[in-house]
Image (tube, rainbow, N blue to C red; front, side, top):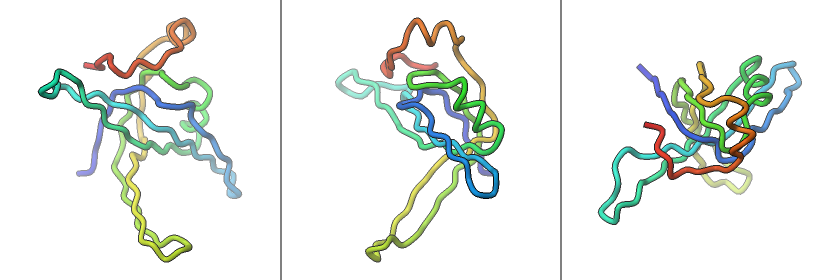
Length: 121
Protein backbone atom coordinates (compact mmCIF):
# COMPACT_ATOMS: atom_id res chain seq x y z
CA UNK A 1 0.00 0.00 0.00
CA UNK A 2 1.33 3.43 -0.96
CA UNK A 3 -0.23 5.97 1.44
CA UNK A 4 1.18 9.08 3.12
CA UNK A 5 -0.37 11.63 5.48
CA UNK A 6 1.40 14.93 6.18
CA UNK A 7 0.63 17.93 8.36
CA UNK A 8 2.65 21.03 7.67
CA UNK A 9 2.81 24.55 6.30
CA UNK A 10 3.18 25.68 2.72
CA UNK A 11 6.59 27.15 1.92
CA UNK A 12 5.25 29.27 -0.96
CA UNK A 13 1.96 30.05 -2.66
CA UNK A 14 0.55 27.19 -4.78
CA UNK A 15 1.14 27.37 -8.54
CA UNK A 16 -1.80 26.46 -10.78
CA UNK A 17 -1.45 25.55 -14.48
CA UNK A 18 -4.13 24.74 -17.03
CA UNK A 19 -3.14 22.04 -19.53
CA UNK A 20 -4.21 21.68 -23.16
CA UNK A 21 -6.60 18.84 -22.30
CA UNK A 22 -8.59 21.22 -20.05
CA UNK A 23 -7.24 19.62 -16.89
CA UNK A 24 -5.43 21.67 -14.30
CA UNK A 25 -2.59 20.86 -11.94
CA UNK A 26 -1.40 22.65 -8.85
CA UNK A 27 2.03 22.26 -7.26
CA UNK A 28 3.26 23.41 -3.87
CA UNK A 29 5.78 22.43 -1.23
CA UNK A 30 5.24 21.81 2.46
CA UNK A 31 7.51 22.03 5.48
CA UNK A 32 6.75 19.27 7.99
CA UNK A 33 8.30 19.40 11.46
CA UNK A 34 9.95 16.30 12.81
CA UNK A 35 8.57 15.19 16.15
CA UNK A 36 11.88 14.88 17.97
CA UNK A 37 14.69 17.37 18.56
CA UNK A 38 18.35 16.72 17.80
CA UNK A 39 21.19 16.79 20.37
CA UNK A 40 21.33 20.60 20.19
CA UNK A 41 17.59 20.93 20.85
CA UNK A 42 16.63 21.87 17.27
CA UNK A 43 13.69 20.34 15.46
CA UNK A 44 14.36 19.02 12.01
CA UNK A 45 12.12 19.90 9.11
CA UNK A 46 11.37 17.80 6.03
CA UNK A 47 10.20 19.37 2.78
CA UNK A 48 7.74 17.66 0.44
CA UNK A 49 6.61 18.55 -3.08
CA UNK A 50 2.87 18.05 -3.54
CA UNK A 51 0.89 17.73 -6.79
CA UNK A 52 -2.90 18.02 -6.97
CA UNK A 53 -5.18 17.71 -10.01
CA UNK A 54 -8.46 19.16 -11.33
CA UNK A 55 -11.14 20.58 -9.00
CA UNK A 56 -9.05 20.02 -5.87
CA UNK A 57 -6.19 21.92 -7.57
CA UNK A 58 -8.45 24.94 -8.09
CA UNK A 59 -9.67 24.74 -4.48
CA UNK A 60 -6.11 24.64 -3.12
CA UNK A 61 -5.09 27.61 -5.29
CA UNK A 62 -8.14 29.62 -4.17
CA UNK A 63 -8.00 29.01 -0.41
CA UNK A 64 -4.40 28.16 0.53
CA UNK A 65 -1.33 30.40 0.63
CA UNK A 66 2.23 30.42 1.93
CA UNK A 67 2.35 29.64 5.65
CA UNK A 68 -1.10 28.02 5.71
CA UNK A 69 -1.33 24.83 7.77
CA UNK A 70 -2.72 21.89 5.81
CA UNK A 71 -3.17 18.13 6.14
CA UNK A 72 -2.62 16.21 2.93
CA UNK A 73 -3.20 12.55 2.21
CA UNK A 74 -2.07 10.81 -0.92
CA UNK A 75 0.50 8.56 -2.49
CA UNK A 76 4.22 8.93 -3.09
CA UNK A 77 5.20 9.01 -6.76
CA UNK A 78 8.72 8.64 -8.18
CA UNK A 79 9.75 9.84 -11.64
CA UNK A 80 12.93 9.05 -13.58
CA UNK A 81 13.97 10.82 -16.79
CA UNK A 82 16.95 11.98 -18.77
CA UNK A 83 17.38 15.74 -19.17
CA UNK A 84 18.49 17.57 -22.33
CA UNK A 85 22.16 17.22 -21.31
CA UNK A 86 21.87 13.43 -20.96
CA UNK A 87 21.89 13.46 -17.14
CA UNK A 88 19.64 11.01 -15.34
CA UNK A 89 17.20 12.80 -13.05
CA UNK A 90 14.73 11.68 -10.41
CA UNK A 91 12.00 13.41 -8.47
CA UNK A 92 9.71 12.42 -5.65
CA UNK A 93 6.35 14.03 -4.97
CA UNK A 94 3.16 13.41 -3.06
CA UNK A 95 0.09 13.14 -5.29
CA UNK A 96 -2.73 14.58 -3.21
CA UNK A 97 -5.93 12.56 -2.95
CA UNK A 98 -7.49 14.20 0.12
CA UNK A 99 -6.81 17.32 2.17
CA UNK A 100 -8.08 19.26 5.15
CA UNK A 101 -7.65 22.92 6.06
CA UNK A 102 -6.18 23.18 9.55
CA UNK A 103 -6.72 26.88 10.16
CA UNK A 104 -9.42 29.38 9.37
CA UNK A 105 -9.11 32.02 6.68
CA UNK A 106 -9.27 34.73 9.38
CA UNK A 107 -6.26 33.23 11.19
CA UNK A 108 -4.33 33.05 7.93
CA UNK A 109 -5.00 36.72 7.16
CA UNK A 110 -4.15 37.93 10.69
CA UNK A 111 -0.99 35.80 10.97
CA UNK A 112 0.58 35.93 7.53
CA UNK A 113 3.99 34.70 8.67
CA UNK A 114 5.43 31.28 8.01
CA UNK A 115 6.57 29.89 11.34
CA UNK A 116 7.97 26.43 10.70
CA UNK A 117 9.24 26.05 14.26
CA UNK A 118 5.72 25.46 15.59
CA UNK A 119 5.05 21.73 15.68
CA UNK A 120 1.89 20.46 13.98
CA UNK A 121 1.58 17.68 16.60
